[in-house]
Image 1 (cartoon, rainbow, N blue to C red):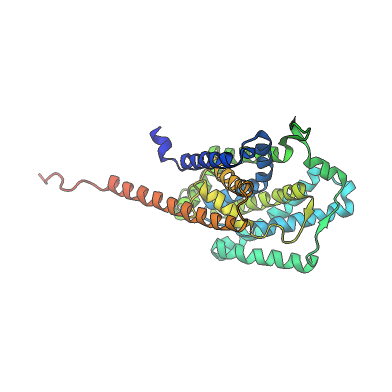
Image 2 (image 1 turned 90 degrees about the horizontal axis):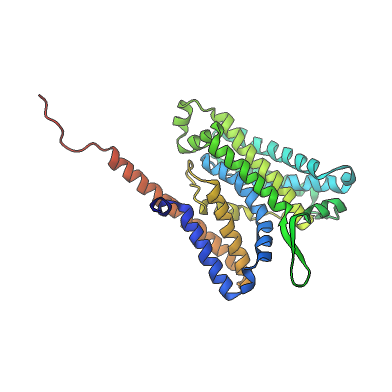
Length: 341
């Protein structure tokens, strides 16, 4: 119990319980199984992006360009669906989007590692480059009218329930994709040398290099992984809304960063967990859904997200300060000592 009180995830979980209770009292429709499954499905997009952002933050970096990468990937597969959609299948769609995402993520990694440009500057620049090129090529055209099989895939459920009115709901295939990605990510961070290397690089780059970790390889993996999640997320976005637009994901960066930081990942690197990320995504999703149900004006959502980022970063900085102070006290030898013989 004492260890739980020191874990950041405990307080995020308590915040989720408190907010769910408050919203449910105001509107009982919030605390229903149907809304729960809908919430999981809608959170899958942010959750997929958050997986990639978790790896980047743990490594000591940050990526602002993932929405642009996702938009480029999503627009490409949308064009292919409209032109040769009947020759494709869902596996090819995910594969193509993933390869595009990985390629663009590798560009970020190469710039960051070779030119030693801070990751936030690099990814802001590449975000503008990716968005700019896409806008010039597409002239801002929205794409829709995808093949029937693509829309049908989005409606697949692992199991189905029915409301009193006969409307179906259940665990969506989109949610299952997110769950599988979560399990893979948890395994990498918890049980592999690669995961330990990512934590080591984020904790202290010089120490990680001296320990024998390949910093170039780790950097390439982290930003390629972010690109992969962006590519997969682009397909999830298209499945959810059945429309692709060049600006549909603009502004989502702060939601994702807020969710991961709220879950306990440090902006300074070296810390973060998959469980914390899940809780962070859950809380941010509940905030958005709950504020809608309570009919709070949408403009207040951005205010809340800003406050969440400030409070989360402040709490992480305070915990790091306390940890450093305790470490110094522990390692400081007692005054005095034995006199020389």
